[in-house]
Amino acid sequence: MSVSRSLHRPRSGFTLIELLVVIAIIAILIALLVPAVQKVREAAARTQCVNNLKQIGVALHAFHDVNKRLPAGNGNLTGAYHLWAAFILPYIEQQSLFNQIDFKSGGGWNGSTGNLYGYNIVRIYLCPSSIRAPTMNYGAAAPGGASYDPLAILEYLSIMGSDGARQFTSPAIAATYPDSGWGSQSVLGCMYENSKTKLTDITDGTSNTMMVGEFSGVTKCQKTNDFQGGGDDVVTWDGYANAGGLYVHRSIVYPPNSAVFYNTTLQITGCPATTGKITSAALKSMHPGGINILLADGSVRSILDSINLDTYKNLADRRDQQTLGDF
Image (cartoon, rainbow, N blue to C red):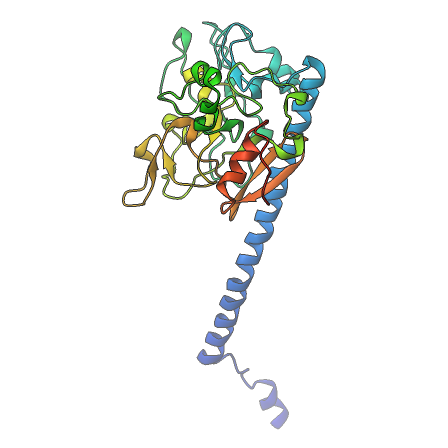
């Protein structure tokens, strides 16, 4: 009889207190694991971003080997405005896309044919840390009645130099490339409008001069949307060469990730920001604390938001003969 009773004795379950303790322990473990997972994910994304820039650097040097100069940041050397990112397509395994481009017609489309090659997403031009969609909506009509939308974006921009005030020390340069309503049109860097820079022109040293900087995601005080927003929001790799394609350049005027907006509708209400020009909008990224840049020797460096501004500007100029600080 005692054996029978022991066989049918009900099992004791968790008490409410025990259950709550288990739930609390699980919650603590999740709280500890989530930041660690996010850090690992961001580290992987940053590594991929660096690799993207390295491949762009290899492509720029390959272009230089063939053409004896770097590509123009933007320009109409071929009969119509196109951007550096279009010129290096054959060197990043995008020959078929390059073959679609009529370089005698404007960026993003081929005359009135409606061949909107600019729709094509080029993954190497996108930072994986970015929260952006890979395409943007401009809301305008291209030749032939086709829509610009959705054009593929570019998250790495050519550096045309530091702020134009530096080039005013040369009256001839200042007269030819004055600052405009679009902002500083510096010619002190490696790639600017109609530039034909050779590596030998970089007299500050290729390891001391940046060619390309990151312009991905959103910066502080900035709303998130997919509209171009005057060029200080997102830009395209060749799709809309407005203002001669100045959207795809940057003159280094402000530190990385500074809240500087040409289009103030992008600014979060009440968040302190500076009103600036398109070409002066700060380089930005979603990486904690800084951005990645490509130097003219093909190497990639991560620089902090807190970089000394004079050092940052010196990095942007190819022949200022200034001694670089630490970066």
